[in-house]
Length: 124
Image (cartoon, rainbow, N blue to C red; front, side, top):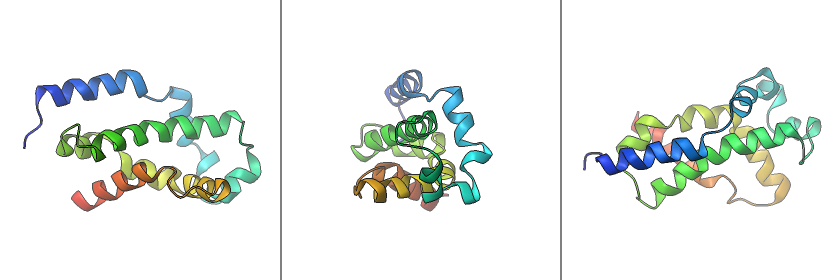
């Protein structure tokens, strides 16, 4: 089924409402979250209530919301997989999010984002 005008309208509403701040996006693409700074090492440097953690949370929440509407089939899958750069973002901050799961003991945390990234990877 092809994307509809309604799909596009929903996507634009999501973009206006859930788009992460420029600061959150910039932080997630900075040297602060790459290589040896990612995963468990991130938590050694940044406490749970730090701005840095909030930036990662905000950026991940954007993708998690898209994953939610994708999983519930509330929007055209082709449109989501073409528009939302989940795979690229998961490669970037996924190690931090996986470490967060382990730290908090919650395997469900960010599972939608991870599934969306995997679906996007499989479709390309």
